[in-house]
Image 1 (cartoon, one colour):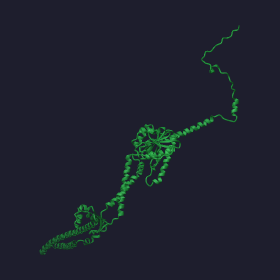
Image 2 (tube, rainbow, N blue to C red; image 1 turned 45 degrees about the vertical axis):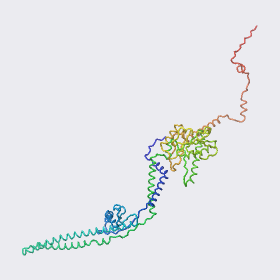
Image 3 (cartoon, rainbow, N blue to C red; image 1 turned 60 degrees about the vertical axis):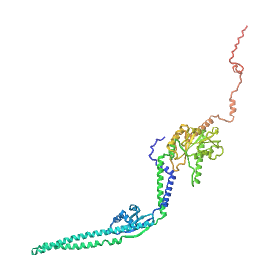
Length: 536
């Protein structure tokens, strides 16, 4: 035996095989998700959506702008004040906070913004989009005009301050001129210079204030709706495809996740290596299950061929040893019944065969039998009189362990992959060992077609089929050797050998039998002694 290796925390090979075996489940969940997504698209269609585009002109726009101004406009559009202003235009009593959830703005370029509005009806969506666009344009122009007015007021205030300074300088200059000859020419010249600068500044501020008061007519004229609100057309095929694809992806992900978690938690062996280790017996053969659906036409013949081949293997083992054989199923009652009928048909070539049906569902009795094969139930008198019998029972949960030894002295387990957990496989192996029923091997039902693990144990050769084959081969070899030795020990025959032996044989001379050899003389009788004759 090889040294036991540390088992990984998560066996990826087993996980992949488990997911592959449960592909019907997660494919079903994916299909359910697809159907549910399409149903949502049909019965819960998307609300009507109106789309409009607005040209927004900024007074401080520049070619080097990276979209900051447009992002600011989108943020302003998404405010409660803007939503309330739009609802007020159409006399809608909806809450602004709820309306904020139904529309969104998107900056397409630095000067074009797209507004999308959802509503219960198409007319309502178009009206809300128009009101929202008008409210944004009014707010944008009002803010621009307010900025221009504020700038004009600031310029006028600076002009008034400059005029006050000019009046003060004029007073100083008049005082200095009033001194006559005592006036300071340098100071007077400086005052005149300051007066000239203030006059120029006042004129400049007056012009700027007038320009600012005009505002930004290009902003007011350029900011407008360039694409009137219209209901966005919806493609049903695209909608169904989108919703169905999302449902398919979600269903597939949930199905695979559930299958993976259940494979890790339930601990049901599916690999040949694991099943042979937990049962303590080698996997001698594997058979498929009856296909369901369209594959039934071309896969059924393959399943029948596999069952017949396995039955021939078991029949050879049963012929080599006269001990009774039993087939015990674990999650594969129908497969065990079919295998038993095939085995009985193969053994019937040598004589009558009795099949003991001890399955809970009596699957063997439902199958047709031919020839010298008789199907009886457990306890039937024909079981005791049978020369060759094959018992069919179950080792699934709820089994009466004490009755398994009556089905056969040796057992072959017919196990469905992924049916029983590790604990139950250990229980079956331990109970059969306690009953004194050796396991010849395991027939694996519905295995993974890509499972290449080794299901052969290298111990227990005395109970395995390969060990039995070795014993039979040894017996045959010993018989051949014994026959050869007998042939060698025979005397050599040649022509005239018997005449020569007859001449060499001494003559048989007859002699009278001794008194104790005679049948009429008692050997225990006293012996008479004769007296000698006296001479006279």
